[in-house]
Image 1 (cartoon, rainbow, N blue to C red):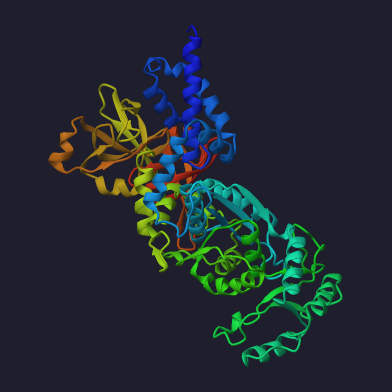
Image 2: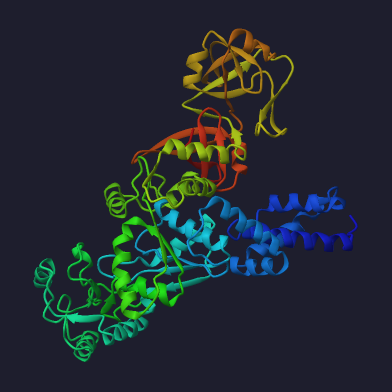
Length: 585
């Protein structure tokens, strides 16, 4: 084929444009098929020979996908700003408006503690914060809140795992921070807060302080001068106090009805020689609490809108005292309800306990409600998007049933999942009475014209499920995509017993007239053994299946449908073996 350089240049330009636009709309990864359809629509002169340019088009899409989402956004906003307008308008239609939001100035943040894998409940703030940032052409910050190396000790690999989960969800961020690397900044703010008279060093033991607090009284150290408190703070930093001997408290209302709000702790001492931090090791012993670090960083990072679960309502009250002392304006705050998945445990503590009790080796176990577990099971990110969009930012708790989750997922995977025949507990059957060879056509997908063809002759050997065989004995039945047969007897073939299925007819109308069952089968010469792992509560049932060998052409992560058995995700492949994870019916 002679290369038309002019056409090649047009294809390059159009491919680059639509790959970038598609990538921006789908979390940074362009879909090749979607891009090709855009090329065909925009360049009619290329349609006839488009296949000849596929490798070239694919290379451009891969080039675009190597860019960060921020780089992609910058190129699209410069060259095709109308595409971003479509995206922002799309989100604005689906989400309620943010209070006091200014176009281009909105800053949201996602602040996970890297002590656990993301789960469905975490997907809600992740997606909402990202979608709002996109809708207002602002930015989202990813901030790892890891300032408790003792009680909520972060795991080194979780920092990476969380980012991997977010990218799979289609979430991207403009800036990234790790709070454990910002302790000098927090110390500086603490000094200013003490100088302003908004905080003090408390040397009471915990029991003594609680006695004062519960009576609405000040502890003896509350009214010391800022200079004295700064000296005590320096002693804390120098290691002259041990765990529990000194804390920094923010001054609040000693009569506040919620006693947890009264002079809450901003800094405490943690012996990192016993519990070293995975990022900073033993370098620091004075650590900010969640409320101090989160509040300070929200201000310093310019966060305009905080979207978080309603369990943080009290934290909002606490943090506003700090803001008042510092003369800062508190961000707009939206608290939404808890999201739970019926029949699936999302709680960190309960999941960790189950992992220990059940001996689970990974957060990607398909029995778990983690993003990794749902993904491995075959739940699509678009399914999670729809769930989160449906529950939105309402303040009430939302419980999603597995039935509804599966129903949504089914509408997404059904149009793309190729179909395969599979049998359980296989019984060998030999087909007899076939005079002329039969072409068995197995539909690859109901919406596609292509079929997979088997050539069937007399003495062809197949496998049937024992359950299906028990249903059709002495009755006419149809083998899917092939012909009608009747089980006659058992014969020995090459020293092995086979059921004999005698040819009856080709016509499909027989099925309608006799209400004959249609059963699936696999060729004895063209099958592969499959292990299907089926989550059932906290049990993982293992089933052995015999599946059409052509299933080996599927890629890892592909969703397939096994006739009459349900949808499954391809988990792993060996030379002549495949592992599937059952998704749902």
